[in-house]
Each structure stands twice: as structure tokens, then as C-alpha cells.
Amino acid sequence: MVERSPAAPRFAYKADRLKPLRAFCQTARLGSVSRAAEALYVSQPAITQQLQALERELGVKLFERSGRRLVPTREGEALYTLARPLVEGIDGLDGAFREQLRGQDAGDLDVAAGSSTILYLLPGIVEAFRQRHPDVRLRLHNVTGASGLDLLRSDAVDLAVGSMLDVPADLAYAPLYRFEPMLITPLDHPLAHKAELTLEDLSPYGLILPPQRLTTYRMVDLVFQRNRVPYTVALEVGGWEVIKQYVAMGLGISIVTAICLTDADRTRLAARSLARYFPSRSYGVVMRKSKQLSPQAHAFVQLVQPDAGSPDD
Image (cartoon, rainbow, N blue to C red):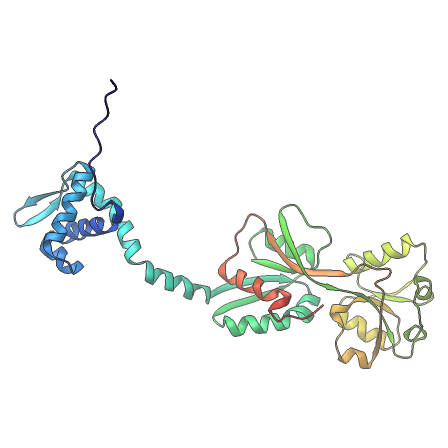
């Protein structure tokens, strides 16, 4: 016949372990059952019952009397060391929770982005973020794509916003907007009103493009090379605003992304879609895969979402 091990003593307060631990900690701190009862707004018999139940469950004596004061035994001291931070943590949860919420409305947020992203995509997003989180100190780092990724990897920024063609394995990219490629010319240019545009139509005219190291130049070169269409670069210059100004002056034509075209540009430039030949350009958020976003960064990402009131495609 198999012998059964004696059943462990049942603990009447096991369903609510916090009450006896709170009673124990207060008694250890104050040295008196009566004073612990006053601090917890319960009766002395309730404190005594909770302490006795705790001793039965643990199988040790937790207090001994020293004069008129109760002092923890060696076992009681060990339990007090473990139980005190737990009880204080639970009792202070409400305040800590509210402090954590307040922390989401303060602190720092660093975002890396290129000039076009800062100038055309982010203004409305930044405005909405400042209205909702006025206590957060937001810093926009105006850097090119590669430099922004370096800042992201070194934890110098919380996230990056921009366009990516190739996504490194250690990063996550969430494309949120897409913008068409556009040919821009002066209003009176021969291509401004041509019914159908081909790459061959662009060939006789000098292009104004960003520097060769940037994605736009490389994409333009790739498309013309693949289609075996010759082209010439009249001018290399950085910045969409400068490019638009030079095109409006009649110094050349350009291929830009629709993100940079404003209502004011329509009064001085003709814009034609080149989606037939060039891919649309995505813009989105870049994050490190191994890093959890801070509350401030998470709030910013939520505002970048197109359905949060940011610019349309």
C-alpha cells in the first residue's frame, strides 16, 4: 500500500497573499500588532489571525517579544527583506502608474530625417506632436540616409523617417507613404503640354539632378541606361527647393518626387507624371529591430501613420 505524504497545511489567506504580508510588514516595522492594526485600519484580531496563518504556511516563527515590542526572528528578518519591496510596490502602484503616464508626456525624442522629409512630410506631424506632447523635447537631426542609419545604430536617435530602397537586416522599415516621380519644367517648356511623354522626349534637354551619391540620381541613371536612352546632366545641385528654382529659371528640367511639389509650385512649374518609367518613392519609419520604442517614440510613430491626419499620397 502506497503511503501518502502528509498534506501541506492549508493557508486560509492564500487566495489573498497580500493581506498577511502587509500585516506582517507593518508589524515588523512598528513592533506592535495594535499599531499595525491602526495603520491598516483593521482590528487587532484580524492582524493576529493573518500573522498566525502566515506562520502556519511557512512553518516558522516570525516574531518574538523583546520587552513590550515584537521583533522579527531570523526567519522573520529574511521574510521582511523579501516581502517589504513587494508590498511597497503594490501599495505604491497607483502613484507609480500615474507617474509613468506623466513620463510619456515629458522627456526627449530624437528623430533623424533628410531635408526633404523635414521640409515636406514632417511639418504637420511635428505640429500635431507638439500639440499633444508639449513637454517632450523633440530634436530633428537633418542628415542624409546613411548618416541617419549610423545615428540610429549608435542610439543617438530613437528612430528615422525617410525613404529606403534597401533595408539592412538589423533594421525594420515601415513604408507609410508613396509619391509618384514627376517631370518638372518651366510653364512654357515644349514638354509642358505634350500629350504623351517618353524618355526619348526628355533626351534633348539637360537635367538638373541631385548629387550622384543620392538615390534620385542613381535611379534616373538606372532607368535611362536600361531603356538605352541617352541623357545629359546640365547641373548637379542639392535640395529640391534649389532644383525647383533653377528649373523655373529655365536652366534645365528635372525629375523629382511628388513629395516636394506644393500648390505654390504650380504657378511657376509644369509637373507631369513619369510613373510609366520610374518607380514611386516610399517614405516611412526606420527602427532598430532589437530596440523597443520609448513611449515618446511610439507616440510619434502613431502620428506618422497616414490615417492620423498626416499628408496624403
